[in-house]
Image 1 (cartoon, each protein chain N blue to C red):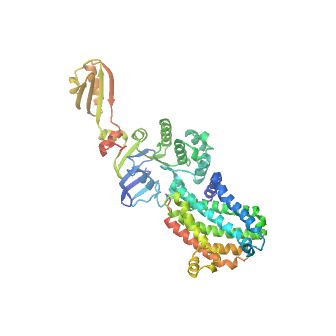
Image 2: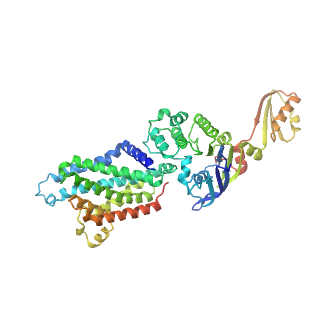
Length: 249
Length: 305
């Protein structure tokens, strides 16, 4: 069924790019955000306490990367629910296509899009990146893809249970954004009250942020085995759950 | 030859709603078999169980010797399916959909160009799905159902939303499929469609199959009534018509006589009577019952209610 997967993936990419707001919203906005924020934060003299903390140099790519990831996940939640509501999923299923092939095509499209957006971001905002080493950027991209894949599985779980396509985006946002809020992306986890710190241990974004920040400042992959294991666990659990509750129509 | 589709005692419920109560029938190779009934009768559920898209609560189904639910991918490879109320990606082009579908089956696909031509879609090949009219979408779905040159074709409400001209073109296409030895299973709530197109029909209501036969046999069995309406240029004595065997009533109003009776011979008998009595008629109409009448007779209500 590899042939079908390749063909379906290619068609989904074309269909996505034909959407007037699709390409701009998913690719353009994060790149723009990165350039604007980079300019605002990066051009300020070190006397500014915020910049002096090294926040912008270290965290801006991570911040935008997480934004790209969330964007991607929200878009898959929406697409899957629109496809279900319109009977597109059902129509695709009434062929020899395996269900996992149909869903994999969407995941591949979204991961490709994530990588492309990140690459564009690096290109557009070269001077705001702390590093120009290609290998380093590649590692960071890989870290983002792993994080995104894990968060996509949460997206699938959300897509499995949202009642209608109209609610898909808001429900997804209401679930995902608070998780980002307590992920240590904006405020280090150590500054949280103990109770919230305990809750944050179950937050997948916590591990995504830790992985991305670590890889960005040059940690080895080995140093983040725990993060990788947690993200893998989230992926396995959410995929297994959505396999049970996913509705095709 | 074993039947292509074998359905025995199939039951399917959604919560408290019984969609299919107890359906049993067989479909033979090379016939156009129609499942007819009003909306909500359980036609689509029955069809989707046969296609392997739903699992019946009980009963058994075999299609081409396969269990549709357990061997769904094997089955899907050999059948063609047109679903009711389906959609495609908004911005997929007609040729892209055809090309995608053609790549999904193990068999060499049917001639796509010929299919597009037959369905009048040739000049729409580069049009996005969302910009097609309702009828064009429907025709595209029929094309997708035929792209793998399937052994059995399932068509759910195939001409819904089509104008009469397109409807006739689709009927020709379906007969063409049958004439190539394929089996066609369709649902419709249009009695005219069932009567003109189907070799055999099963009448379904409230999840049950009420009767199965050829349209002609169903009409002869359930609605043997015949009516002949005559107009004459002047007043005519209706008495001779009353003597015809199987005549139940003769009404005379001004210059029009309405004769009601039973059986296929009634019309011939009226013609013979006219010539024996040298009655000159200015108009002659024989009104025969149709499947719609059969349906009303069997269920006590019109199919459109």
